[in-house]
Length: 576
Image (cartoon, rainbow, N blue to C red; front, top):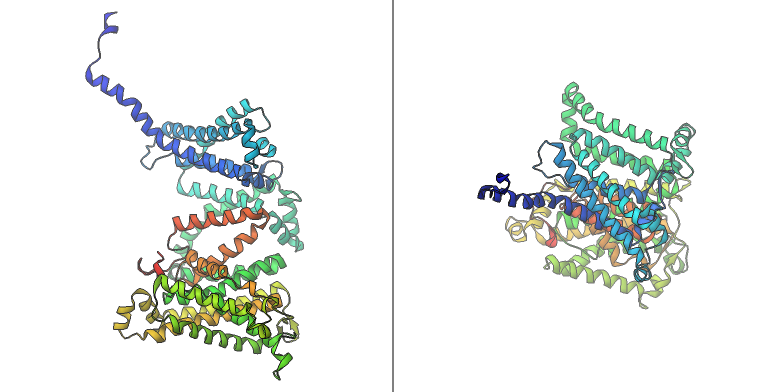
């Protein structure tokens, strides 16, 4: 028995004392991952997003969008608990995943405990009975908290196991889950498309009910997406082996091929989905057309222009004055007859170019942030002039110009959003072609030299005045063309349609898509204009999703979603 009372050696004491800090250090990452996901879930609950999402059914009688968010956060906590230097042993990974998921569940349980405090229920209006039922599974507070911790631990283990899968398996499961969530979220749009044609109606009835996605439909959608996600890399390798020349051609022109597929999808979708999607894509095409113009100024020439909306307004007002059947139109008090849309558009574009050149003259010597402030002031001057009493006899002030006619192609009136979308798409493709040709031209190289360094560009023989004025003029031309289409789309023009936010939105889509990238302009317009419209059912919270998406993109892809290859310092106006 004496050996039980023998003192351990100093080395053994040191090993025992270091055991607890090593365990705590190993569990630090899982605990932080679980805490971060838990706080994200509590934030979504306390601001009311979670309850709003709970009303959107993903799978009928099985899963809602709010529950899906909670499940994904738990899985993410477990997936993020695994370190990059983790061993192949499964038990440590499962233990870390269980800890991360349990911490996540404990955070939600703490949020559930707040329902017991009457004062907080009066302050936080989002602590509704519906939210409590969602978090507690209909149980009492005590069992519900235990259930949340246990369920969170199970989700953490599942997320840890998912992170141990191979790359192709992870891609297949992620593709399947994404397809099911997208199909459930956009089920109204998908049902509208599928019900429009008799040969797709049977597919729609198989996948969807009036309330949402059926569980059989969810399994089918997930299985098809998983198979496609798994077979796509294999098909690419087989295609490369069988058709090496064509594969090399497509690889060398990958951006052009992807852009062609994107434009083909955008061309077909309005005809399939109907007028609402046509209206959404019409706005996307309009912003794309304006983005092509601003991309010349900002992306190529490095001229940060915040008064870009002025050129858009000039094109809209010029078209309205020349074509409207109104008492303030030019035909009402001059001998100039009312013109058709096709005759008015060149005049509107020319006037926009003139205004663009006139705008460029005062700011030729201004650079960077000061240029942005100066162009902002010039844009505000146009807005003030339109609203002023001085221009009211011509522009009709705040009352605007009404009765702008729709354009005609022969005897066919382009009155529907879908037909106007195709008109705008053709104009956007023309603008993209011009911008693409300009990039590789002598003028385009002069613009890029001007963007990178004005002193060096001038020393190399670039005429700075000519290059800047051409950039302002060409950018204004595309904005004026977009304004002309905008006037016919609304059949009216009002000053409130041309505020600073429009210029900021166009600049934002360029930054998100990739400054100087033609493809990035299209992707940015789809994300910044189309996404908020598709999320309109979520009310004011859609702008929160919009902002979160922008933050995520700027963190993960700081140079844009479809950026061009350029030096990292070649960003206009201090943008990085």
